[in-house]
Structure formats: C-alpha cells, structure tokens
Image (cartoon, rainbow, N blue to C red; front, side, top):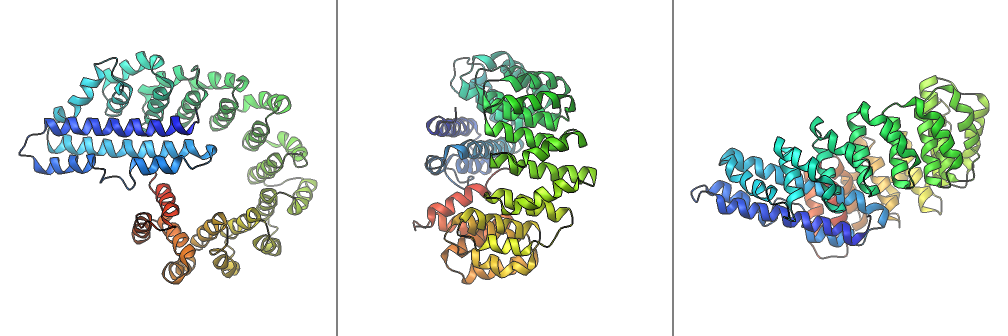
Length: 445
C-alpha cells in the first residue's frame, strides 16, 4: 500500500472529510455566535494548518518511497488533532449537538464514503456506539480506510480499541497489520503476545520486522529461539539486521557469542546492529569479553560509515575515549555519509573541541551533512545555539535555513517564522523550507 498515489489520496480524502464536517457544523451554528463562526471559517480556509494539504501532497509525491508512510502518518495526525481541537472548541462555545450531529449523521449512513473517518473521530470522543459500529464494520472497509482508522485510534489509545487492533492482526493488508502491532505494543497488551509471535512466520517482510520490534517492547524473552531460527532462515538482510538488534535487548550474556559472530557478517547493517547490540549488552552486563572489544575496535576502519560511527560510539561508552582523531577524519571524508556520521558523533559525544568543524559543515555541499552539523551544534547547549544564531543572521542562505531548522527543533518561534516566510517566498529555497516546516509540524509523541 506504500504507493504515492494511494498515500496522497488518503491525505486528500481526510482533508475533504474534515472540510465537509466543518461546513456542516457552520450550517448548524446559531447566527449570533460570531466567535465560533470565525473559528470554523478559519478552519475551512485552512488557516489553522501550517501548510495546505495540496502543498503537502505535492511534496510527498517527490519523496522516496521509504519516507512516504511516516510523512503521511504525521500529517494525518496533524489534521486529526486540529479537527479534534476545532470540535472541542465549538462544543464548549456552542452546543455539543451542533458539532457532533454531522458526524453522527455520517455514522448512520453505512455507505457514506466518510463513515470510517466519522466513526474513528467519534471513538476518540468516547462514543461507545461508534466503537461498537467500527469493530463490527472494520473488515468491510477498504484497506485504505482500515489503515487510516487504525492510525487515528493508535494515537488516541483506549482499552476499548483493543478488539479492533486484535482483529486487524489477521488483516490481508500488511500495512494494516503493521499499525495494529504497533498499537498493541504501545499498550503492552499481554493477550497480543501469542498472535504477534505467530506473525514472525509471515510472508510479509513489513509484518515480520514490526513483529520482531513489538516482541522486544513486550519483553518476550521466550521468543529468542524463534528469532535465532528466523535469522538463520531468512533471506532478508533487513530482517536479519533487525533480529540482531532485538537480541541486544532480549536475554543475557548467552546471546553475546552470537552477536560477536555477527561483527564479521557480510552485510554492513548486520555488523552495525551487532555493534550497537553489544553496546546495550555492555550497559546491562557492565563488561564484555576482551576479544569482543578488540573486534569492535577493528571496525573503526570498516568500509561502512555507520559501522565506523557505531564502533566509535560503543568504545566511547566503554571508556575508550581516544577516538577524536578518527572522528576528525570522518568530518573531512570525501563521502557525505561519513561526514554526516562524524557530525552525528560530535553531537552525541559532546565534542565541543570540534565546534569549528561543525560550523564549517553547515555550508557543506550536502543537505544531509548540513542538517546533521546544525543539530549537533544544537546538542552543545548555549554555546552551540550561539553559533547557530550567528549563522542564522549572518551566514549564507544554506546556513541560515539549516540553522533556522535546528532552532525550530528547539521550539524557537522566530526560526519557525523564518521557515514559513521562506516557504512562501517562491525562491529556490522555498521547497526545502517547506520540507523542514512539514517536519516541524508533526504532532507530539
């Protein structure tokens, strides 16, 4: 279901739904209630949203497939949160009947195209009848509507939704199953343990990956033998790497020899995940075999940037902090991924002595490197913010935008306003600023 047309279509459908609801509310308002009327009109005109649905969809259509799902989820939740706020405002300032009646009318029309969305919205306002109708009708919705309703219910978690999520574990669409697993993991529902374990044998890579991570969150140590078999039997590098990460979280020192072997795996993702899994084991056990430490140290010269960075970070945690020279080499590497990884380590390890290196990287030719350098400066606290503020005021156009982005992450309202202005400027930087603004507009976790 990760198809650009389908995913943007779902955003457009939800946008149409919320406007339809708002128009119905407006028609039901008492003419004397100008305060509420202005609020609803502003909602319909899109003034309560930082970026229009049309602009968001245009941006998403240009994104790589792997990034689409998260961006759509973030914006669906932003739309939903804003709709919930508008409904609450109208209910408090006018009457509950005024705002709920349009949703209830849609709920009663079984063939209404927006019925699943109305049901999900009413569920989030604790309408028991809506919860029951959604549970009964869920499997008859289209796969897109099943996915959207789960995304919305997962965010507004309630124990009443558990039957819907459990039913969705058997869905024919892997993306629907994925959301259901994540929802049950979040609530740590014991009854979900066995159904989720069975999903380790799914033919869908998406489902297996999500199930592995969920079992880690659920603390399912008894699933370790199954995960080891999964590692040996799977042809998917992603699944194998995810299992390695899981073994870092589950079990005790009995998994260390296996993780040690994974340090020399042919796939770089497996090697990197093995390093970080051993880091977690060290944090839990307090010590690792000297042979393992030596093998991790050798990986500082690995051909993969992530393996290099994770090895340096792990050694640092274990007390081997004489790696600044290795990080400096990464910062001047011809490879942008290595430069970005080096910048990440500067912020992660609080390497204040490399501040000037990070400042220089804010004008790097790669956006990825510029962004990581700015975020790492932000991690330096007041001193890093001082550098960023100077760049935001006096740096080149790339430095101004990336510094504003970093400040936006720190909830700096002036920086966000700068991004908004740049997004609407029509300049060559407008699209980049829009993408940053979309990232800043995600709902709170």
